[in-house]
Image (tube, rainbow, N blue to C red; front, side, top):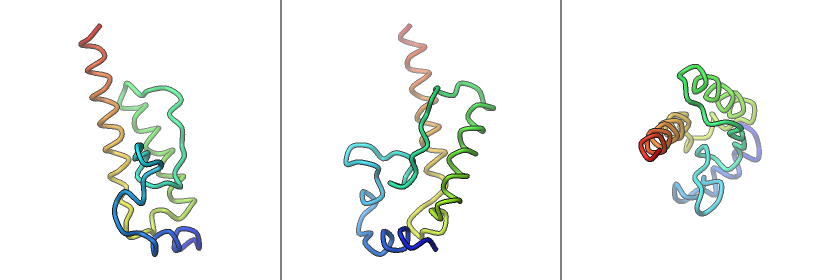
Length: 91
């Protein structure tokens, strides 16, 4: 496992430790910084964004962290979809 990820994992005490900031969970790991340039609206766009984040997680060794679940990515994408629906209903 990547040394930085190992050290971070050893310091883990609560799930909040993994948050990007105290108020932003981000992609479920503070080391994942893939930006959302455009909100995905189609399944293809969501799959592309998922792949981009998953690739970053794999490259940085985040997938090896015992506290990380790739389901965090799915949760973020689901929340984006819910936000899109709410915005459409408000329009």
